[in-house]
Image (cartoon, rainbow, N blue to C red; front, top):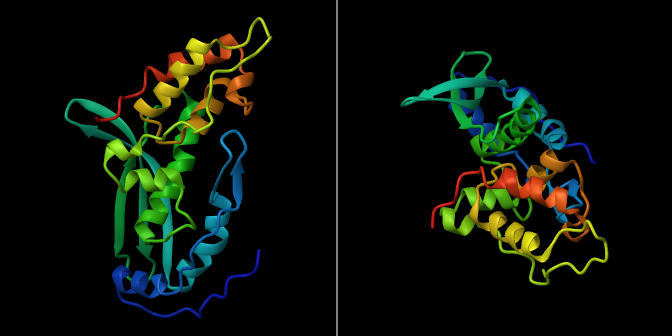
Length: 222
C-alpha cells in the first residue's frame, strides 16, 4: 500500500474546524479484504487505521471507541460509542451505534469490529469504492436492505446423505432476505458454524444451525 501523504500539524480551536480541514484530505478508501464465502470485498479495520488515523492526528483529532450500555425505555441495549476529540480544545463529537445479536462474547466481538469501522467512516464522511453492501443498506429504506439471492442460485444437488435438503436451501435464501444481519450474512454464518464453504456444500446439521439462529433475528420491515 502506498503511503498516504499527511499534512503538517495545524492548530484549530474547535473539533468542527479541525474535522472540516481533515475531510479535505481524506481519500476514497479501496477495498483490501475479501469474504470468500460470498465473493464480496470490503475495507477492513487495519486499512482504516493505516490511512485515516495519521490524517486525523495531523489535525489534532483523536478517536476513542468503547462498548457502552444504553437504556431505551425498558430495554438495556449494547452499543458502541465513538468520540472524535479535538486534543487542544477538548471539544468533541460523539455518537453511539447499537450492537445487535450479541448473545455471547464471540458475537459481541464481531459486532464491535463491524461497528468500529462503519461508525467511524460514517462520522468522518469517508467513502469506500463501490460502497460496502452494509453501507448501501444503511442509507436506503429497510426494504431495499434485503439482499437478493444470486441469480444463479438453485437448489443443491448433492449425493451426500447428510447434505442439506432443498427445503433447507430455500429457507436459507428466504431468511437472508427477510431477517436483519447488520454484521453481514457471511459474518453471521461464520459466527454460527465457523465455515466459509459454499452453501451447497453444507450438511443438514450446519443448515439447521444457521436457520435456527437466523429465525431469532429481527424481521426487516416490509
